[in-house]
Image (tube, rainbow, N blue to C red; front, side, top):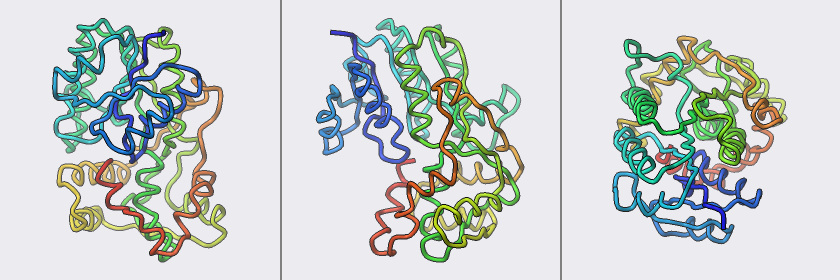
Length: 316
């Protein structure tokens, strides 16, 4: 039997990148080892799809040995966390010990604007940057994948309620342009890299959607997809931040999200590349098509559509 491809974060819900990657690899006939944090219904769903499920903790050396042993290729991805750097180094050390031949690392595009002298006010960005440095120093055969903001984040979780209830997008982006990319497109790139990693070792890929526009443009896309007029209301970053805190979201996560909003307002998320198409042969999902695919979330009655928006945010 072929050595399994390891996918960490396979049971995650928000973004669901790991889960989607697992599904794509299994459809290709690959042997997949799916790492999860807990034995629950999501783990069982992965087994039902055909994955080998292993429960582990990225901060625990013993469990990481069990997770990585006998794998040659792995995907590393983790949610926003103040333990991000420790988890990366832990996974890298064990991967190095077991002779991993390809380490596909999920990063983020903001790092393209960072250096030893340039950072942002979000500690998470610095942890991401340091994690990339550590992986590069490790000598592991690494590929860094840096998507911009995900459509499922700011444009599903953070706009669904206001669009559904008052036909408005309320985000603190000002006039800033952005090129959000869909989880399914990021997952397609990752599956392609994991299936044939060797030509990509040592490279960095930046993933965006097919358009870089401001919110005035995107509300027109929402309007066309939903068949009703959607408007944009800019709100101050601090007001938006306070609202997230009132929902009970962790301060560390909220501070990172507020930084992302500030970067949008400053025009630092205006970037567009065609690497999704280059790597997969198919272009990324447009905003209009994304909204159309998720129309029920934007139009369902509040009682039916309030399926735990805050719960999904907590898992970003």
